[in-house]
Amino acid sequence: MTDTHALPVSYSSEVAAAKAEGVPVVALESTIITHGMPYPGNLDMAQSVENIIRAEGAVPATIAVINGNLHIGLEPSELEALAKTTDAMKLSRADLAFAISEGRTGATTVAATMIAAARAGIHVFATGGIGGVHRKAEESFDISADLEELSRTPVIVVSAGAKAILDVPKTLEVLETKGVPVVTLSQDDFPAFWSRSSGLKSPLRLDSAERIAAFQRSREALGIAGGMLIGNPVPEKDEIPAAEMEGYIRRALINAEAKGIAGKAVTPFLLSDIYYLTEGRSLTTNISLVENNARLAAKIAVALIKTT
Image (tube, rainbow, N blue to C red; front, side, top):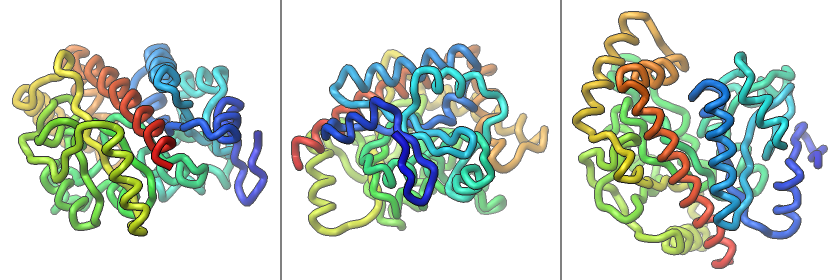
């Protein structure tokens, strides 16, 4: 089904049916497919995440731009083709419209996925970890557009916290300044992606998907704009302790600086280098946390329908 109003937007048959029938939908980003891991592991991961969402009673909507067309949900053949793509742009708020207007193919980051999800009437989005304030941002001014998007776009973002390669304390400070609710599920400490705890107290805590949905409905009733960030700790069996991870991160940062890596290339380089340094453990943890986030996001989406 194609939306012919203003932009070339296509809904997968599954998402179109869900929207028509009032079935809850969960948005998924696509940079983790094109920039997060190689084929065919990326396809296996994407299919697994989509199936987890279906098992919880919701419908997955993987979002991407393909040849200038914004896709809200991908057909199986489209998902496989995207997983094999090697030259997809990495799209955020600044370049999402550029890719559409120029007929390019690109994968959506957290910010771009939130924009597309909100436009499609999707209220919950599952990702791995959000971007934020980079280390030494006082020198580089490198701060992810994800934080600004969370302050303005009404989507619940389920993550395993901020990526631990970032300056997590400053990231939380910026979110507080922008009025973004940060809620951690079932623990007092804010998670740090590969690790269950960042060592920082979470601003807020809720212990179920139903309570998160009720919180969001209260925000809507008050007319409070913007999104909400959910910190969902990685399952304990798959975590890499924070102290151990910090050693790998510091080594990867040194390697990035030595190679002159900057801008959008920093995060993919660090994730790749950390994969090498951890002998693949970081990827196993990454897949686990993404699947865990998809499960929680689907439960929140279902609970939101019930509280309507």
